[in-house]
Each structure stands twice: as C-alpha cells, then as structure tokens.
Image (cartoon, rainbow, N blue to C red; front, side):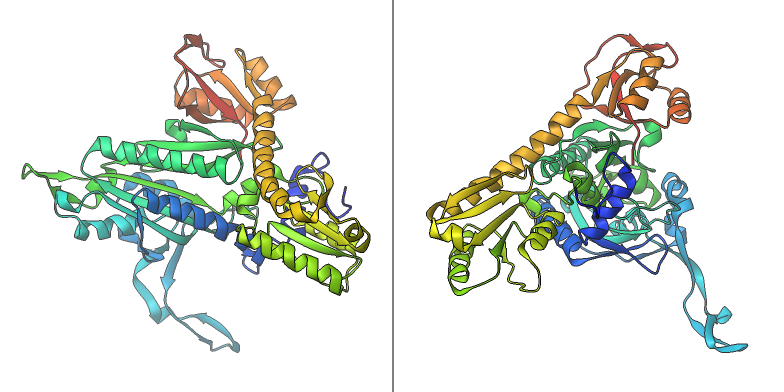
Amino acid sequence: MSKEITSRSEDYSKWYNDIVKKAELADHSAVRGCMVIKPTGFAIWENMQKQLDKMFKDTGHVNAYFPLFVPKSLFEAEEKNAEGFAKECAVVTHYRLKTNPDDKSKLMVDPDAKLEEELIVRPTSEAIIWNTYRDWIKSYRDLPLLINQWANVVRWEMRTRMFLRTAEFLWQEGHTAHSTKEEAIEEAKLMQDVYAQFAEEYMAMPVIKGIKSESERFAGADDTYTIEALMQDGKALQAGTSHFLGQNFAKAFEVKFTDSDQKEKYVWATSWGVSTRLVGGLIMTHSDDQGLVIPPKLAPTQVVIVPIPKPGEEIDEVANKIMAGLKEKGISVKYDQDEKKRPGFKFAEHEMKGIPVRIGIGKRDLEKGVVEVARRDTKEKASIGLDNVVAHVEQLMEDIQNNLFQRALDYRNDHMTSVDTFDEFKKVLEEKGGFISAHWDGTAETEDKIKKETKATIRCIPNDAKEEDGKCVFSGKPSKRRVLFAKAY
C-alpha cells in the first residue's frame, strides 16, 4: 500500500480526499466550499460529457444556454421549487464596488448601485427556462421541445467535499416540454434509462433504477426517477435524477399551447441532470489503497509506456511502433520519457493516477522479443510478444472494463440485505451497511422517524419492486412492497 494514501479501512473519508489530491484531480480554492478541477479531473469530466452529450443528441435533444442569473420574482413563481432551494441560494444585490473612503486600498459595495430586483445565482434553471419557453411555445407544432444545457450552478452548501458536494459544480440540465402527460412521463423514464446505461456501460458502476418517495423528490416535481449506486463504504450515491414536473412550471409561468383541436392547454414538463459528482462516484466505486482506478472507456490516458531504465534508440523505436498501433485502434497512449524519474517512481505515479494499462519496455525483455504489460485493476503482469502487444492491449481494455463492473456488482449484491424487523434493520446498517430492502408503510412520518433514528433514507422504490404483502419494519402497518434504504452521500 502506498504510504501516501490513508487506507480505506482506516479512514474512508480521508482516503477519498487523499485520492483526489494525490491523483491530481482537484484542489481546494480560495472560495470556501468551491474546488479547482485540475487537468486530470477535468479530462475525466470531459470524457463523461462527450459520451453523455452524444447519448442526449441520439435521443433527439439539442443544446442551448440560459443565463446564470435568475430574477427573484421568477424564482418565486413556482413555490415548491423556490422553497426547496431557498436555503442554498446565493443572491446578487449590487452591481458595483467603489473605493472605501476610510481606506483607499480597500473596496466596498457602492450603496448607490443597488439592483432594482435581486438576482439569484442559479441553483437550477427551471425558472429562467420556463419563463423563456412561454415565448417559444405557442402551438402543438412547437412540441416536444427537447433542450439540454451544460452549465455551472451554485448551491451554498455548508458541509462540502470535493466533487461530491461543493458550493459550485458543473452539470448538465435537460428541460423538456410536451403536449401530453404520457409523453412527458415517457421522457422522464427515457432519461433515467440513458443515465443508467451511461453509468453501467461507461463508468462500470452498477445502479438501481427507481422512483423517489415524496419527501425525497425534487422540489416542484410530481415524480422523481433516480439511479442509485453503492460506494465501497456501504453508502449510497444518488448518481442521476430525472423529474416529471407535471404542469407545475407551465402553470407558474403561463406556458400554454394551442392543440390540434384548437383548444388552449398547459404543456407538460420534465427536467433531468447529472453533475461532476459522477467523478466522485467513479473514485469511490473502483479506486483502491494504491490510488485511482479509472474504467478504460473514461480514462484520459488508457495506456502508458515506461522505458526501463530510461529512453534509448532501440526502446524508443519499439515504443513508437506500439503507440502507432494503439492509436490506430483508437486507444489513447502516452510515452513517459522523463529521465529525471526512475521506473519504480513512474510505476507508482501512473498507478496512483489510475491509468488502466502500463507497458514496460526494457533491453532484456527486447532481447526476448517481449514487453511487460501490467493491468491496473488486478495488478497482474504478463510478458507479451511484440507482435501481439496491440491486440493484447485492445482486449485488455474490454476485460478491465468488464471486470470493474462485475467487481462493483458483486460488492453491491453482497451488500443488498432484506430485513423484516427494525432490530435487523439497525444491526445491518451498523455492521454491514449497503442497501436494505424493507417494507415501509408509505407515510412521510415513518420515513422521517427512521431517518432521525438511523440516518438512513429511502433511496428509491425500485422500478422492479414486486407486489408483496408485508408489515412496515418501523410501524408494523400493512405494506405492499419493499423499498431500499441506505445511508447516503
């Protein structure tokens, strides 16, 4: 184990922070609660963004951009949404500074530059977008309107952790308008499926698709569809949400359309989003005590070539040939020619940064016509013939991706426990963690009491939850299906 990283078993929270810092993903900034995303961390987010953007466009969505600032009156228009985000809002009240007359080296807010109306720094964009949609939507011919934006948002969190919860973060938010309720619900479910496919196929992170309880749903939504993942410490992570907004925002902003029957109707709405917390989810799903582990499909650099003990004409020639072959296969590769660092140091460095495959090229190996290929996920090494290196690495990309998913799935399945009593519930939560499948009587009162006593929340009512008669683990009242509880980020 690297001495630079606290072990997961010793202190999971510190282990996570160590990975973020040592793998050079992000750093703290001068602004409390905000982070600087470093090139490696941003490259992972760019790869996520690139794939998600393609998936959105493949399902008929287009990108646009809306202002960062939301007039307070617009923000207040949908009461549940305003109330739900009120405590997290940053508010702009003035538009100018001036020199402090008592200290010329300091600036102060100019009292004469007070805004006529205060502006909210967007915590989410429904208000500004639906105010705009009122002008864009007039007829059924204007529907559906399928728009996404890539943006930053601000939610003034008191307790922050890089990537997982920061005062400012990057995300995408889709906002769609539809002529019928059925079409809007279908859209919300479609985007839940898109998120689940991305999480499992690209992040190698298994998720459970479900619907949120009323108290956990998005402020202003009729229903919230979620994907829930399990981290290596047994806590759940809400990895993406898709909301059926009903006609709440349409009525708040008077967004109507004339249907083909010439009747004026309110539109039906959805919104959906994922954020840079996915980078945190990726770290906590796969990484180990040696550092970051990145699934090949999202790795900025998929292969690193290390000369042993240092670059030379013969080694360079082989490295360049291997690089050309890998690039032809669409595999990103880096040749580490830094002569100031020894091979052992480089191995540890690239392991820390989670590069999926490392190729070591030494003179002795070349005399035998082989190179050493090491995979990051299992630490296994193999001597591979020069003629077979590219094909072997190409297969490794798939093998590593599949192995990471299976490993995470096995962990989740081992930490999925059904309980029938509250004593069992508390014991499993304390000793094992993970998802707890239990009957719930459907009341917010019971949900709140369980949360206060155990800190566990209902993560979702799974889409595939079976109807079965049972008794609520807390109240003993009748229940028709099990729901999933867990402690969560």
